[in-house]
Length: 174
Figure 1 (tube, helix red, strand yellow):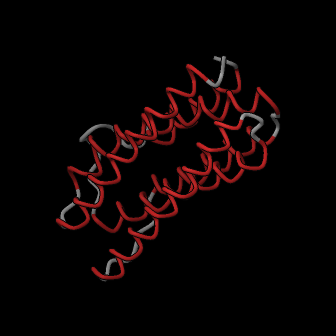
Figure 2 (cartoon, one colour):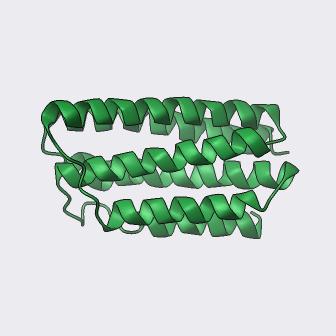
Figure 3 (cartoon, one colour):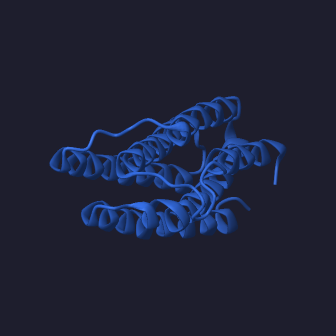
């Protein structure tokens, strides 16, 4: 793993390090803010990759990230509106925003194959950490059944994204 990829991976781990498995208590409004922030981070990274990626498969993956995470944000927004829940910013959602900005700044300094590899390495780490956060903190703490159901659907998509990114690490990054 390159130094840049390690930094991005560490950044994702530090961001989600604020969500130890089943240790942090968060309410539905805080979960909503975390979900919005996590999805926005990947939309923004995907848009950057659409502009900078060299590899066609990486560009396709980036488009999938933009499309799927934008859809997840819309679904979450629709649900919180329906439930009359206002997302409540918290340390984790703020750390996600900051971590996403830092990761994009590091990725912005790369180009060509180095960018593609760092982006995909970051996506593997990010989605792995998101799945762990969903399993260990977000889903178990969600009180509203509809929110819990949405998080479980998002989890399935995050797992699919993780597997796709891992596959790209093996095939497109050689």
